[in-house]
Image (cartoon, rainbow, N blue to C red; front, side):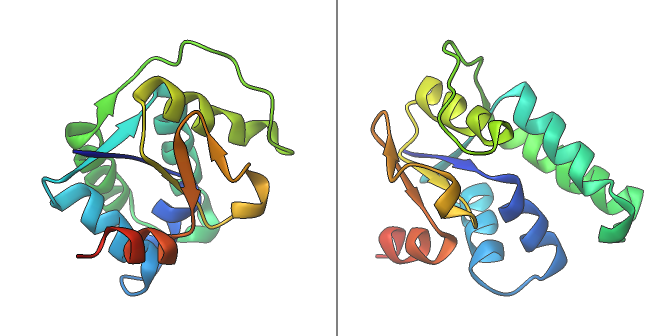
Length: 135
């Protein structure tokens, strides 16, 4: 099973536009049994907070449905180490989750905010993820 951590920008992009690599990534990770979404409480809280921002214009029902699917399908981990690596400290929690989950991939639309790899986790764009995981 391929373990994957999704940056918040992937979730937002997938919900705003059902086409493109972020949406393909989101759907593949949630629907394909070869993949396991890895989640921490901090990441889930960020998803919830960001999706409720008024400028995203998502209904409460749409947000609740997306979060329910994520909640039910995720492998929940409790990060065991504190990381201070990313230029934006809010991004460090994704590395913490990836390390604790032994994730294969961390997928982000802001690749420049992360190291190239972390504790065995490849950090890739949605396009790179789709290319790497398509047989």
